[in-house]
Length: 250
Image (tube, rainbow, N blue to C red):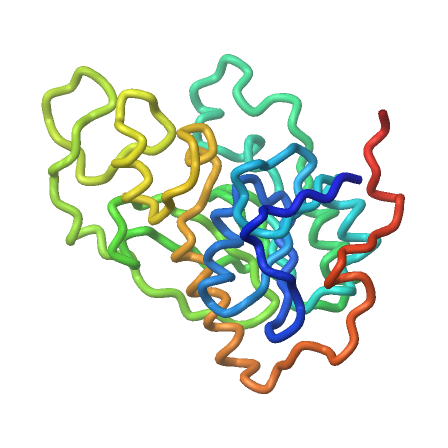
């Protein structure tokens, strides 16, 4: 296991609840929780040099099983390729990806901690809530589904506010109502502004969710648990002294 900390990332767990962000990629979900009031530790099997939070390179599910109970709240975004709409294009899109949602849910429940599982429409989530960028004044829709261990009343989509004013990513002349994300023909600053993210590459944006989604979810959890406080003693979190089970094979 490799622990990498952004030089600007603060120590965690001293004043605020600590959120474990699994399958964190470049930290879009984690940033929303930070804005809501959590300290964030991200875990991903791939290096994430642009993730602005405390970061641990490890297998997410192995880490969850070994350390999930040490955190106050857990968010998981298992790979969505098996369920993405792009599978309809054929050509093997999404093939070879294991459905990690059932195992993720099993381990989250075993941790005893409140949790959120995020994925795309069509993923096998239990009683999910859908969030849309239009609900938060963003120039994307990017519908995403969230299974939560606590009740959430989601804001409604507001597609009517989105008017045609953005360039197409193709040669079409008509304008789009939203910004297409994850394509090279659209300037990255336009995509970043639409997502409410200013630190990611185009590839990272294509895998991200707007931080507004998790800022909302984290805020809802904190409102429902207003008395929740960080434990006076944490084992392993401030210095992230962790066991060897998560170390990748060389």
